[in-house]
Length: 144
Image 1 (cartoon, rainbow, N blue to C red):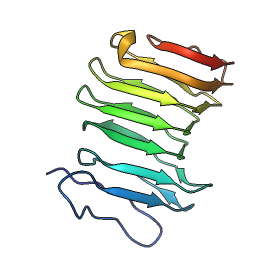
Image 2: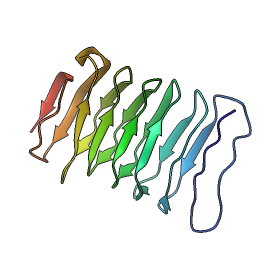
Image 3: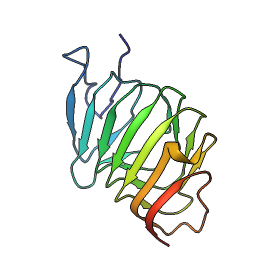
């Protein structure tokens, strides 16, 4: 079983189940690591992940309401739904990774760079104010 290290100023979270866990992240700064299949993260307003999140590798992870300041990278086995998240840096997707970005906001240097096929990366109802073009994505409504 893979583990996740969510580090807050005080402690780290552990997974009670082998899959389908759910976490509510507070406004403190977090570091996300590897997670287990079916995990859902919901951020309260002001929740910030201030370190790079490298090589998300698992299937069917949902992350909602989180502000990512560092770069996010998805490995080829990843399948992630980002819902109402904010990205200050590029989301790098390895060929084979799959992601849906729904209602997300891309600012500073935020964009999606998918090295796989466009059908694996969907931008749905997002806002991209970074001025940096997305690469190899399928866009269904994006405001720039």
